[in-house]
View (tube, rainbow, N blue to C red):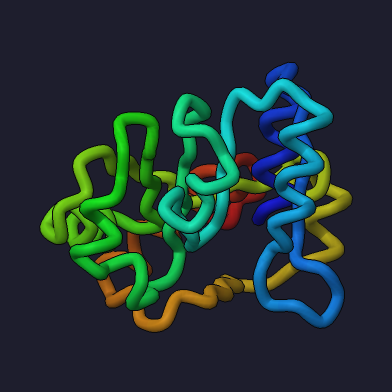
Length: 168
């Protein structure tokens, strides 16, 4: 999803860089973030499942920071951490129930962003669809999105990719 989101920004005309964990590490190295900040004029930082409170010692508070929450991680629901969010900190939830939960925990700026997919890879062109014929394939790493959320995500994805295939 990270590469697909970055490609979406590129298609809109934005320069985009992806900073990832180094091989064998589970978190992004602060030096890699500092290097991007030194090389580029950064207008926005987006990170999956980590919020600005982890980075404000490196990333200036003037640069907007968006966290795309896909997983229910304890640090994202800690009231002390939520209280650290500033004016330029934004949150996107991967499914509607998660958005509601984030609101109820004290997040002020929460919107819904259910999927990002690169149309040049995942498209409904007839020859590509024939390569991947199936009734329904749905894979998620969400711990337990619940029936309502699964239905919402499935409808969103079908509306995007089932058009013209005769498989709605």
